[in-house]
Amino acid sequence: MLEEHLTQRRRPHAEINVTPFVDVMLVLLVIFIATAPLMQQGMNVNLPETNTQALRVSDAPLILSVDVEGRYFLGRKAVPKAELQKRLEAVFEARASKEIFLRADKQAPYGVVVHAMAAARRAGSTKLGIVTEPEG
Image (cartoon, rainbow, N blue to C red):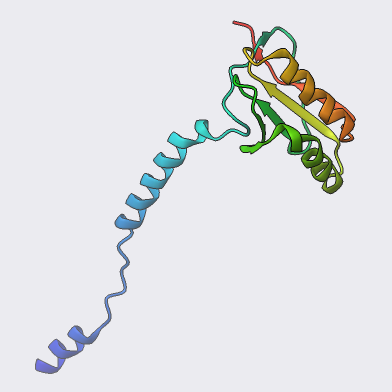
């Protein structure tokens, strides 16, 4: 009788409690769902509205942003006006695609936007797209 009791005690407990794992995964899922809409490339600018259809993009686009104060950004990194063309040239050397998308705030100074377009062209851009918001 004592032997049976000791052998039952020595058996390993083979069940795994997955409840804490599921709890952690659900919390992570909620966090990712909540933060996914916040993930965008470029700076947050107030885009002008148009009624044209959106273009399809095959590669990850190069985005040049101009904010309302006339500052330039490649992705989320600020670029001084004097270095804009050199930075674009360096980026285009490393990329097969010479396409660039310009995200300019609708309140950005016109001259600053034109300077960005000219710098992209001089740096070797073959296509320049202007990012807008749909009307409505």
